[in-house]
Length: 434
Ligand SMILES: Cc1cc2nc3c(=O)[nH]c(=O)nc-3n(C[C@H](O)[C@H](O)[C@H](O)COP(=O)(O)OP(=O)(O)OC[C@H]3O[C@@H](n4cnc5c(N)ncnc54)[C@H](O)[C@@H]3O)c2cc1C
Image 1 (cartoon, rainbow, N blue to C red):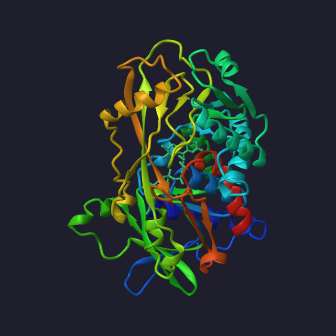
Image 2: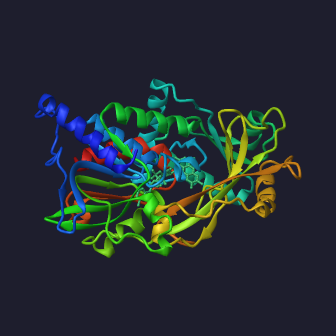
C-alpha cells in the first residue's frame, strides 16, 4: 500500500472508531481526516505513531504499540516487509550467553527468547528448540568457554552444562572437540512466518503499512519531529536528480527509527538531532554456504565455535527443513551513501571463492567435511557500532532522555541477537516511551 492510501485507511479507521474508543485508548491524533498544506504546498499530516522500517524489530514494535491502543503507521522503503537483514540471518533463537551481564543485549535477548518461544507456540510459528553446543577444539579455547558459561549463568540462561569432548561427541558423532558448552534453550524458527504473523496482528489492531515509502529525513518544528517522506519510486534514479520536495510531511507523536542498517544515516538527516548522539556505523558482511544434500544432516544440534571478532564464528545451523548451512563469516565492508542505504543497495552477492576460507574453519570441528560439498547460500550485513579491532558495542535505544527530542526513539546497532530480542525491544520501547 502506498502512503496516500495508507493514510486514507488510517484516517478512515480513526474517524469511524474515534467516538467509540476515544478516552479508552491513549489516542492523541490531532488531525484525522483533513490534510493541511505547508506554504510550499507539501501535504502535512498529523499521525500518532510512525515506525520507520518493516524489519522484524519494526514489526514487533508496530504490533506492540497497536496492541496498546495506539494508531500506528509503518513506513517501509521496499515493496514488502522483512526484505533486509531480517531475512538474511541464521534464524537462531539465542539463549543470551555471549553478552555482558546487564547489557541490553543480554537482558533483551533472555526476555526476547521467552517471549518468542511463547509467541511461536501460541501462533503456530514453525520453530524447534534444538539446543546448541559451543565447542572448544584447542586447549587454549577452554578459558573462553568457561567465560561464556559464567556469562550465561549471570545472564540467567537456564540449563547450561559444560561437557567433556567425549560426552559431546557421543551426542554428536560427527563432531570433534575437546570440550563443549551445551545450551538446551537455543533453537531455530521460521523468521518469515514470524514476521507475517506480526504484520497480521498489527493490522488486526489497526496498524497500517505503507510500502514503497521512504523517509528521507526530518526537521523539528514546534518541538516535534516532522518526517519528510517520499514514494520510493521517485528516488530510484536519484543520481539523475530527485524531487526537491517530499511527497508528504508527517508529524507524529512518536517516531521509532527502526531502519536497521540505515538507522544511523537516517538519523543524520534529522535536522535538530545533534550529531554527537549518532554513533559511527560499521558494516560486516556475513555469508553462508549450504551443505549439498547428503541425506541425513550430520548434526542434530546447532554447533558453534568460540566467537571471533565481529561475529559468533562460522557455525552450523539447521533450518526447519533439515537443510544445514555454515556461516556467517565476517567481512568488513564500506557503507553505501545514505539514499542507496535507504533503497537497500548493499552488495548481497555471495563470493564463491570465500568457500576456501570456510573449509578449514569448519574442519576444526567437522573433520569429515568433504571437498566440494559447500554451495553458495546467501549474505547478510551486520549493522555494527564498533569496527575491526574494537570491543563489541551494546544495542542503543535512544529517546528524549538522551537526545532531548520529544517523541523520537532511535534504534542503533540492532545486530544479533536482534531477531531473538525483537519482541523484548518492542516491550521495552512501549514501557519506556509511551
Ligand atoms: C548474518 C547475520 C546473522 C544473524 N543471525 C541472527 C540470529 O541467528 N539470531 C538473532 O537473534 N539475530 C540474528 N541476526 C540479527 C538480526 O537479523 C537483526 O538484528 C534483525 O533482523 C534486525 O531487524 P531490524 O528490523 O532492526 O532491521 P532490518 O531487518 O534491516 O529492517 C529495517 C527496514 O528498514 C527499511 N528502511 C531502511 N531505511 C529506510 C527509510 N529511510 N525509510 C523507510 N524504510 C527504511 C529497510 O528496507 C528494512 O526493511 C543476524 C544478523 C546478520 C546480519
